[in-house]
Length: 182
Image 1: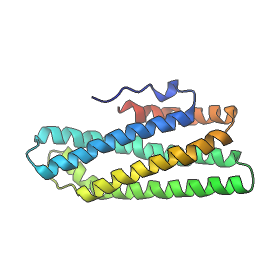
Image 2: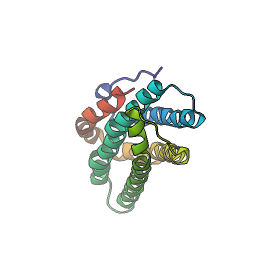
Image 3: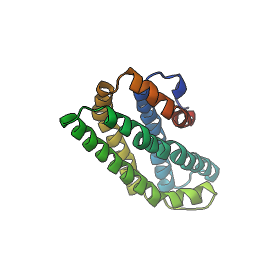
């Protein structure tokens, strides 16, 4: 059973909300990894595979891609605007560029496996490339770890309370959707 999370709208700290979203995304990606394993082993009930594939496809589109967009459209620009000129601004820009590249890599892996998941979600047979699934899951775990240990702590130092309050208004609804899947 999925762990219950408080809605993002009740979290005053938007950086904490981003962090909580990572936990939910990692949970769902482990379900994707399990789905690939069950398919490879065969014998799993078709209806259960179909339901899980439907959940994962919906989740990825709503939560993961939405989470990436919120970071790129709201979080990264807010931190960049608040960063001190010089080294701090250069560091913020470099980290945001890295995280954005990682988003595209994760989304590219997703695009590779999505057609098979879509077929499964419609009750059709499909093979799911376990290597790409593993790469996507591992990439996301490394991405979330880097963001949690590097970018978000820096953002917390750079953004003052007013910046964070403004950011919370921008990200509230999409983070509610991401956490609502859990």
